[in-house]
Image 1 (cartoon, rainbow, N blue to C red):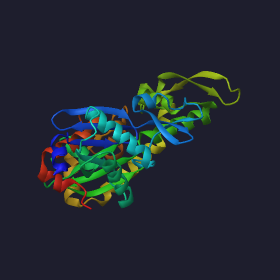
Image 2: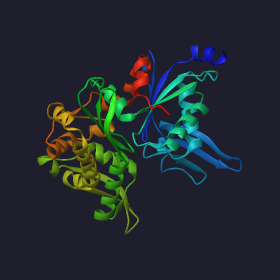
Image 3: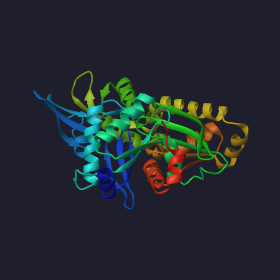
Length: 343
């Protein structure tokens, strides 16, 4: 009875618990929070104490003294640090509910399609410990397809490629079910790492992941004349140790990112090869829809179009597709039963 009363005063919410960012959708309000999945903790004699969460904590990445650590508690789309994830969820839930503690919201959380039962249990337990009344899990490609407005309940192929910070989710969906799927631990973070390693190898320059992310966003996958464009970047010279400024071209940035991009292309081709012929025929016309932050990488759609010979379109507001899709499911109980993971 108490749980029912608490639920009545709670706001049902959908959470896209991402490696890079956590987005929260509240029923009747829309997206109310979009913050980095980063927690700053201070270590002392009593253990770890949370200092900051989200944007404030991200600003501390790589800049903290020895007793303070800025932690990203999710790795490759799944929980790497259970305690810190729980604290992060508590902070976001309390923020949405204006710091009221006696709330028991119904929560639906997007998870990678290749998630293991142990990882599923960790996500659910974190949400319950953070104050959830009911917890449902939905596979990210399914949520992204709903958020992108694809007709997932119809008997036809809908192919979605959701490129997040830690994982890329590739799925073919028909009749509200995933027919073929592949979860690839390649996303925005791997692209940033690829740029960091390339700059280190080619220019003997050490740069942070924040600088690499700026390079990726600004330059993208340069094509034609764009390959001649240059960008000024600053870092630490590995030979002299002195801060140095260099110029990097669009062609060099593309070369740096092509290894993880090729892994994504290969995974898409593998899913296409195993898709039943009747659904494969649908994709000749309907093609592939890109979602997630990675969909915003300049010219990625053109690269995938060249490699697959299929139409490739970018979903409207790709960054929020997963959380908007999960939010729509909150409104439709029948769809909630059909598309959430039953375990």
